[in-house]
Length: 226
Image: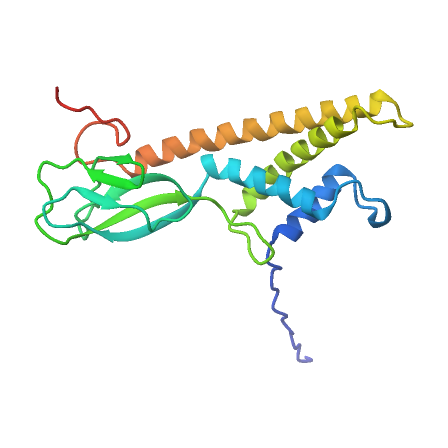
């Protein structure tokens, strides 16, 4: 019996960047003719950035930061957390199993632990937080399952902007062309916002399950004595 030699070839995925999503956006807009493109790259990048920022508000990039308390103070600075969208949970003290999550409040860039007693010294705490996703020429932090959603939102914004720009300008296709872009863009934005609402609902259910504080009550609702 003849020997069979199998040759395997490693498959590497191409990193997704803003250029990758811009290409997909042009396909969505039927604007792939390089000699006659309606939208400049910078314009499409601006719409993609806007869509990503809106998407980040409901489905941010998940982060974990190890911060420290100060003796006698419940306040912890969040100034080091760049592009902060929201804080999902605070683990304090650390090192317990199951993890100990505490209630907190936030004012500007200061997080306040709503604990019975203030920390007695410098102690560690973990902050689980969400930040704005990165999408640029070198990297994308968007999960693959939201990339099409970002493209849909950007397509809607691009179509509406073009329709608004072209409304008062002569066009051989007449006003029906503008109205077509207007309707198409509005439909894409409707789909985009429906997807955002879905991500928001999923995040609320997930966080309520994962980050349950030790004491009864909501992590985001603070009732002051009075």
